[in-house]
Length: 114
Image (cartoon, rainbow, N blue to C red; front, side):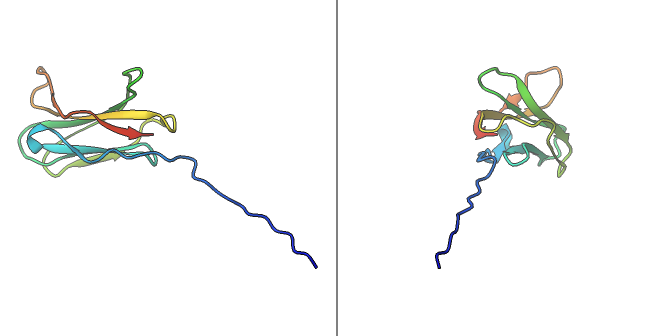
């Protein structure tokens, strides 16, 4: 008697790459991008009247994909407003904003894969 069998292989729909936790200049807050669910988390770590903004964008177009902003020491916000194209490179900046009328002070770009 011969036995017939087959192998069922599954692969994840996405093999995205999270960005590392990235700090705004001066360590006033941080942000990170999670590829699973295309989530952005941003946290304010100092009571210094500064807003912290994490922005994720597509480098090919420069178009902003997701932006989250938070204010107040110890406050964090996590969410996902867009379903990004899987496998595409994304860049994230984390900025400290002291005054809405001035240029934000931003971290260097960090790379992730949606």
